[in-house]
Length: 255
Image (cartoon, rainbow, N blue to C red):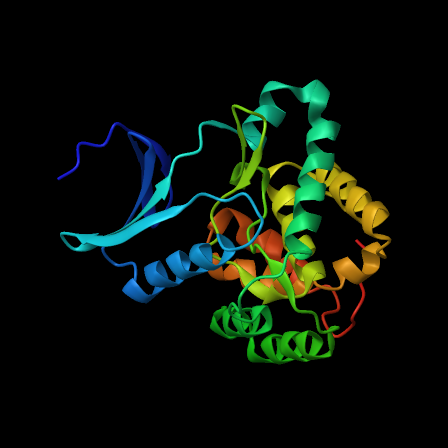
């Protein structure tokens, strides 16, 4: 048994350790083997691109738990830098948007389709059947896209190395699909984890840099909110459902 140096992260379904120059993601015993292997496969495919990501070192079983070993990136997360240097917040947010645009422009081997994953999450949600049907109808008419999407693009998943190079980590939710859905998911994350003002600023920066109508991005909000509600986080549930219930039969929303 490895004597891990320290815990660097704890999630609902995994504990993340640092050991020498490695990161070990140890999954809870109830976590499915297929989910672990899919996360490793996603990273291995993205690792073949020009993006800066950790290297996948191994996947193995320890006792009744599965683990993924990755290369350790020495540095600080963009989230932590934002907290430590509030005067540079806008600069960090611009870097954050530039990195997401770079991800969307990157060609990668085929991954799971985002729309399939969203449709599944909507169906597995606790929403009434009429709302699930309406959401799937909205999803069906959304513009088709085949961009590389991170699926959880958030400042905590950007590591700025000691030589000032940004690395993008945690590709468990990566897929091929609409970049605007990916942006909307980030918009929602920033709204929940920071506040509405930060989320709006992010959306304005992205829209300006890409010449995108913010309403086209917000048209995904009920869909990504419904998918996120599947996580079962009680503190978020009421807020997420309020977004889902805002005239889900329309394709554009004003919030």
